[in-house]
Image 1 (cartoon, rainbow, N blue to C red):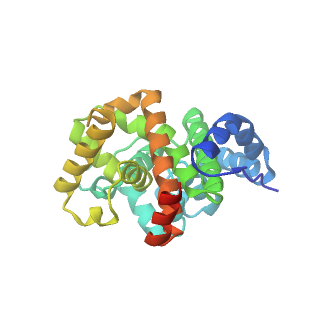
Image 2 (spheres, rainbow, N blue to C red):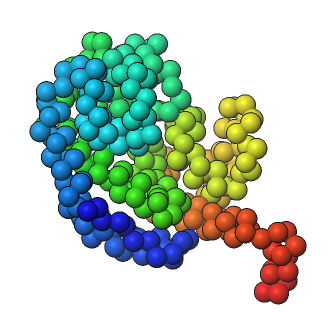
Length: 263
């Protein structure tokens, strides 16, 4: 039986509850039979994986491996994933390097199964970290079954500081975020960007992102999110705006106006 995370309400109130109970809920989730068995299977067998084909041919191993990078939706895309792994990340034209979503580069590099790479599947510490990351991601997905905004908020707590701390230019960090679907969704909502925003060319999107973030936080530099307090403030803004959008979606413009006037 799998423990189902408890999210009693949405918005900031629900987020505060989830923060307070996170450690206990994650531990209960980890201790559930299915998750404990999958982790043990991964650690018992990943050391035998020597090629990209080995990994994609074992569905249980692949599920844990993809989950660690938030790529669980690609579980059935085995040809694509095998190509990502076998190309590696050393060549500029490797598939992972040509994809906007940087998670594929991290995924490919983590196992070292590409051309010219050093195989990492036998490094127990590395594989334990992947197993732990996969469990955390699986917990986030389970939270998302109750409230998808909470899933994105949880993901951002570790993914946003990772991008913020990259040794890259400010614009490169922005493009990395823009290629990460959960973080992009969070940022668009937190900054109040319209649904038509994605139709703009990338340079105009970048300009809008930077301008809006500067209005909200006083800076357009993503490096500010190496500070946990900055991540927390953006998360609160995201959840508040998301809750307002959900509320408004449930009412016609006339009903919303009447409620505001009545308030």
